[in-house]
Amino acid sequence: MERQMVMQNQMRERQMAMQVAWSREFLKYYGTFFTLATVGLTVGAIKRRKPFLLAPIVPLGFIMAYQVDSAYGTLIYRVRGEAESIMTSDHDRLDLPHGTPTFESIEKARRARGSLASFLEK
Image (tube, rainbow, N blue to C red; front, side):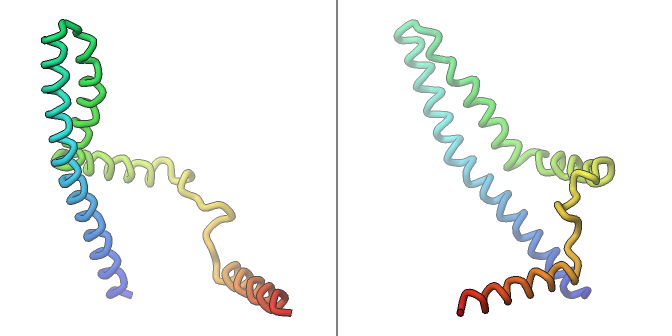
């Protein structure tokens, strides 16, 4: 049992590390896009004297801030804190439909599937 818990924890840590690594890799590409878009829109707005060309920078900036926070900031700690809060104060939101599976319910479903397979074979 202890080995299984250790293995599950290691798998969780690896998955989280992959998620953070993916966020950092995505940030490189999005950062390049954001920089080029910002420079291009700014130059276009100045040359054509049309300040509305700067409007797309605002939503792109929010996305950039989120990606930076996800890759290098404290987003993961805030999410973890919120998850802990949900687990303590809103635990009823975590209940599964029809409750937690029991040995009996699993066996019942297995038998039903077995009888359905034998019925289909006939």
